[in-house]
Structures are given as structure tokens and as C-alpha cells.
Length: 398
Image 1 (tube, rainbow, N blue to C red):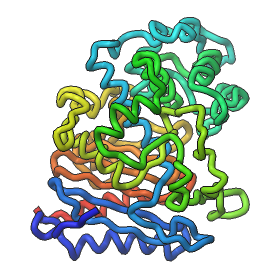
Image 2: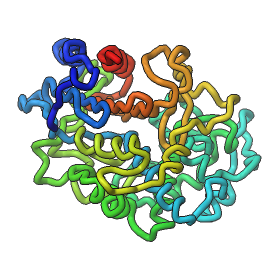
Image 3: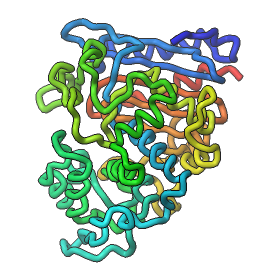
Image 4: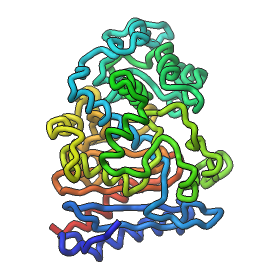
């Protein structure tokens, strides 16, 4: 990616060096193997750097071309896919999901007393996109509730199942909450991905390739890693019972090697910094990039505003500290109050991250996009996201 002169755009080159210092601290301290960061400001790249290694054992340097498991940064892409079909009037946000997926007609809710209750209302498509459906995440939740245990027993993330089988298994499980009762991060976006398949008549991977990746020139984004690109695919590291830094998955034995049968709309993509920047630029430009339009401006505005009523705020992962000052739209977290959030930002900036410490945000007011890519689980073991926001915003001089 070509880097432009930051000073010409009121973005301090001297103060941008603090981004590099932050990266170096995490790598040199042994907390992260490596990372890539990129800042686009007013349509120009003012910072692009890589630090450390994508494969520590083989000493393969991290680079701008490194390919990452982006996990939940898949969610905004799936949301865009579904909203492209919304623009074709194939569904309404307030439609019950059961109107399209009959298996969701006879759901039950696991009550506090252990009894099963009838949901107070059906799950809507909007519930899926804003995480108010009452679904859960099983082992990826920290609540250890009876419902999460049932999710684990259902083996939902077996890479050999299909999206149809995944959806069937989810529909057989009780809801953790009544629809609309609580914001609860979950497999809802995976169900949204299956809905894309039903409405479009195409596998999710094919839909994204034809309608998003090809038009935007996202050449390295996919649900599986092309074997020819294996040398660019990062090793996954993370925290285990025996170590704070351990090898979790090597590229040569990755679940992302083809064939991948389940295209997980909530977590399944691999991508590069350059590719995700093109996606983010499309969102910043209200749905279009370089003459290619994916969404209308009003649709992007609808997706990136807060969709949660006050009684569901602040949002929080089950069992974790609340994300004060943050709301949630349709596939994006939304900044409501930087002071409450305790981090730099602008009201209305929208963001999300993945479970291997990948993160991005888009600030329309500043015409700014910032992306951080690494490969360490679980995400937010370290406060790097807030620190990254600080060193990016402090470099603005206007």
C-alpha cells in the first residue's frame, strides 16, 4: 500500500511514530508475535506498518500482505450482504426469522427457574443483526450457563457441518433470553449468513465473492485459505493453561484449508489489511468505492446508527465488564459517548474486532479508517484497542 505524506493532510508524521512504538512494545515484550497497522485519512494512507513475525518459529516477518483469521470482523461483511438483499425488498427488518426459516417457529426460552417458556415475541431479522435474538455462543461465552453447555454439546462449530445443519441445531436449542430482552453476543450473525443463502439462492461464500469481494477488488478475502497463499497465512498464537504465549494453530494444519463446508457468517473469513481497508472505505463512502456501489447511502446510515433502546445499554459480553458509551447497529459497534467509553473517538464512529486481536473502526466525521491486525487469542487480553485509538487520534493536528 502506498503511503502518502501525512503532514500534507494535517496528520503529524512525528506523532504517527507513536503507533510504531506501540507496536514495537507489544512485540518486543513477547505479548504478540507481530502485527500490521494501517491508517487512511481523507482518502489517503498516512500510516502503514508491520512489526514482528507472522510465523515466529520460522522467522517469517509480518508484512502488509500477511493473511489473517479475522473472525468476528466477518460480521460487518455478512451484515452488508444481508442488507444488499434488504435493498432488493426481499425482507423487512421487522419480519420474523421464522417466516424464512420455519425451524425458528417453535422456540423456547430457558427461564431462571430452569423451566422452558414460550418467547414473548418472535425473533426478527433486526434481532439477528443487532444481537438481541436471545441466542448464545456456547464455549465462546464466559457465562457457563446451562444454555451455553447445550450449545457446546451440539458441536455447532464442527468444520464439517453445513450452514443448513448448523441452523437446524441452533433452532433446537433453547434461547438464553427472550427476543429483544437483552443484548447478548451470539451466533445470530451466522444465522443471518444462512438467511443470505436462502434469499439469494447462493452459498454465502459465492454471494460474497460475486457481490462484494470481486467488485471491491478484495483479492485475498475468503472462507478458506488458498494453498498457494499458505506462506502468507499467519500462525495463530494465544493464551493457554500452561503459557501466556503458546502456538494454537499452524498454517499447514489450519481448519481454513480447503474444503471448508461451513461458511460461518459470524466468524469465518480470512483477509488482509489491504482488503479490509477497501471494505471499510466502501462503508465510509456510504456504500460505494471507485465507482462500484454496494449499498445506498441511507442503508449505510441505517446500519451504522445505534439500534438498541436505552434499557439494553450498556452492552456487555456475558460475564464481562460493560462497554460503557457503546451501542450496536446492524453488524457494527457504535460509539455513543467517548467520555463514558473512556477512549478516544467520535460520536457515531463504528467498529468491531475479531477473536484473534484484529480490530478496525471508521470515523466519518474525521474521514478516518484505522485497522490493526494480529493473531492472538483471546482478543482483548491486553488493552491494545484503546491504546491504538489513542495513538491514532493524537496524531491528528486539525
